[in-house]
Image 1 (cartoon, helix red, strand yellow):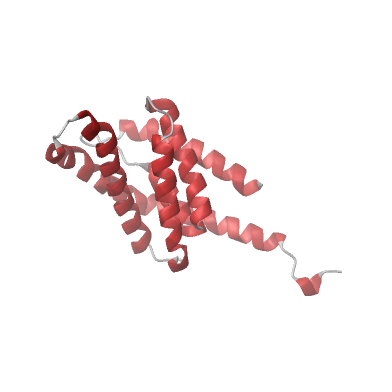
Image 2 (tube, helix red, strand yellow):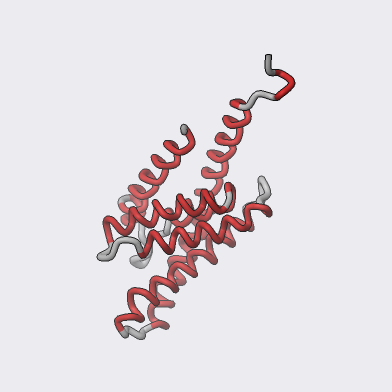
Length: 175
C-alpha cells in the first residue's frame, strides 16, 4: 500500500514539475517529457502491469488538464508503459544505457503518435517542420534529463524492493 501511495504522489509531483518548472526551462519552446520518463522507467524496472498503470495515470493527468478529449494520452502512455514492461527481464541494476535508449525511443514514438492523432487527422501535413522543431528537440531534451531523473527513480525503486524484502519473513524464521 505504501508503494502505491508513494507512486501516486510521485506522479502528481512529476506532473507539477513538468508543467511548471520545466515549462520555464524550455529550450526553443520544447520541454522534456518527465511523465514519459516516469512511465518508461517504472515499466522497465517493475514490469508490464506497473508500467501500464503508471502510464495510464500519467496520461490521464495530461488529458485532464491539456486535452480536449479525455483518454487519448492515457491510452498512449499506458501502451508505452506496457511495451517497456516487456523488457523487465533485461533490467540490469547499474546499466543506464538501456533505459535511456528506451526513453528516447518511447518519446520518439509518443511524438509520432501525437503528430498522427492531433495534426495529421486535421490534414496539417508539415511533418518535416514538426520533426525539426518539435520532435527532435523534445527527444534530445528528454534523453538528457532522463540521465539524471532515471537515477533518482532507480534509487526509489531500490527502496521499494528493500522495504518489500524486509516485510517478508523467511519461512524458517517463523515461529
